[in-house]
Amino acid sequence: MRSNLGNLEIGALRVPGKQRGQELAMESTQKKSSARPVHRSDRIKQIFALVSMVSFGGSAIFGIFSLFSSGLSSQHQQKPAPVAVSQESLLAAQERGYKTVLQREPQNQTALEGLANVRLQMNNQVGAIEPLEKLVKLYPGRSDYKELLGQAKGKK
Image 1 (cartoon, rainbow, N blue to C red):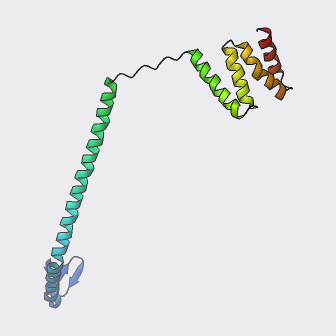
Image 2: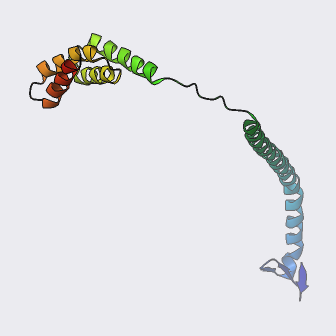
Image 3: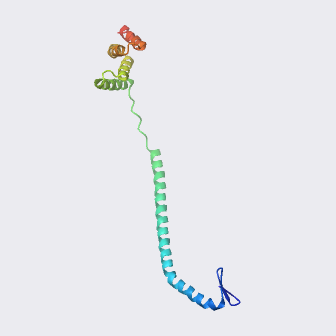
């Protein structure tokens, strides 16, 4: 506060000299009534902010620590070598799968083609004849089926 020729200047307001006493009384009353609750709510806000920052920091540190520790532990562990699966066992599994489909859908073109191809890869020309014959009956316009059937019958 600054006094200037009987006028009181509060912030940007100029108060004439007569009202200065009234303004000071009102100002002190406002400070007394509002000082305590504002101070208490500010203190609560500060405590809440501090607790929030500590918990955020703790969780961030824990996350970073677990990230690095899992990365370091995975480097030290040996990964098991994949089990070598023979080509024959893969072809046998595919053959069983195609047979399963053909039990439900005996005229499934994809399953018939797959079964014939798998059996040809297994050098089982006699087994490939049956699905190829079904394919030729179902799709007489396909010359590739007829050629494969002729090759399978010629090699048996």
